[in-house]
Image 1 (cartoon, one colour):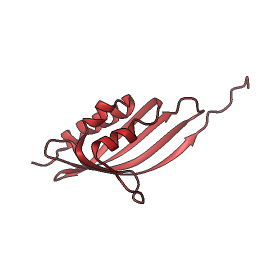
Image 2 (cartoon, one colour; image 1 turned 120 degrees about the horizontal axis):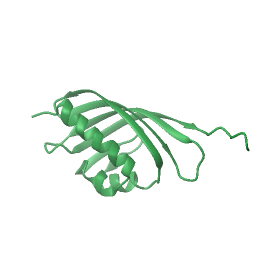
Image 3 (tube, one colour; image 1 turned 30 degrees about the horizontal axis):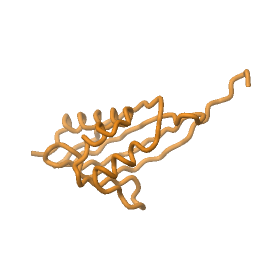
Image 4 (cartoon, helix red, strand yellow; image 1 turned 90 degrees about the horizontal axis):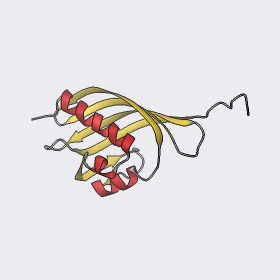
Length: 131
């Protein structure tokens, strides 16, 4: 049985809720023990759930908002468009990311291969009139 648009949408919701919570257990629940997580096609991937979780939760963030749209599924894979904005505590402004995910699932519905391509920009808050 392959991935359906409904199961992919459910996984995406849990993925972005984990992004917001930054909780190691939420993140770990998404991936198989031997998952491979490609963040950049020119860098080595993160290998294994423990390494993925460690890298994921290493940076604090606030005021996270997200949107996603599953674009399609075939076999055991799904493709989605996504966007996230967040603030880093102690830094002005926020970061916006816009990207594409290609997720390949194991039979139990967890991700076994994660590939993403994204672009980002940093938006700095305008100074107030009192500054």
